[in-house]
Image 1 (cartoon, rainbow, N blue to C red):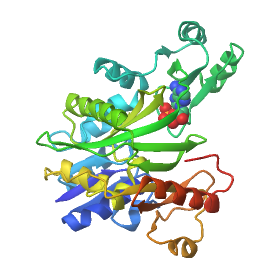
Image 2 (cartoon, rainbow, N blue to C red):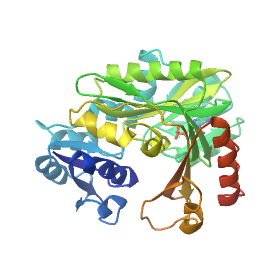
Image 3 (cartoon, helix red, strand yellow):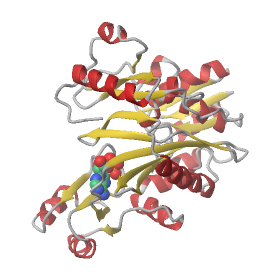
Length: 367
Ligand code: AMP
């Protein structure tokens, strides 16, 4: 079976690496050919809104999927008419628009933040007086890793936030004084079967994911997160992997956003779960039975950002798994990750603390 993937970043690269043992072939489209996926499969390069380019991908492959969620839904829908595409474009459209996403959460009784659409400075002032301060102003579309957002703490911040972000459709929402951030990842197959991975506890700095611990031992929250994810998977008649990111605040979960794709917080599943998120995504979209999402131990995944540390020294660490995406170093850029699996959550914590102290002594991430 041939799989066409829109977007050839590290997620696409890891998808292909997971798919070769299953006998799949891959082709990517992306803006340039200088991308992580180019190391493992052919790439058609061009404008990702170009229906002709996307149609070439759809016609040359049995199923089309994506590793990037800002692809044009209308171009992809036109290009794949009469052909198989997964996850469903309805889910992609909802994930691209923070308002549609919040309304989906509300419709499915998934707790989320109070929010208001904002299109003018007057609307922003009204939203601030209704929802209160502090709050977060975000672009409705195209935000990622905390980009395109601004925290408002006092009425004096309103004008500056509007100047920074105004001019495009926005959303204002309450600021959640969260205790921590988690995500839950699951897959739904073409036959409606569902598997859900254990809960991930995520640590960010400057809006970028730095560390994931999984499974995170919080049985009540894990059950609630799995139930919310299941609602989304069923509501969209979803096929593929879906991720839901949530805040934990005073013992409650509050949904932040969903990603209709494999996710950085699920990289630990490559070595730490019976079936990786990448393999389960491929199994789902190709109509194969899903594999178990059970954990094999206590995993920690550290993102390698900006500059790769010396490989030789890290590989001397017992049981450390190294992933280099083959990208050019740049501040703030995700260049790779490493994963360790321990027999207990306690060992994992002490090991991760040691590793982080060595790798990123300045980083304000404290597991
Ligand atoms: P997002 O792009 O919505 O995933 O936001 C990026 C990061 O900003 C999140 O992982 C949080 O750390 C923080 N953040 C986003 N929205 C809120 C909020 N409403 N309250 C507090 N922190 C937030």
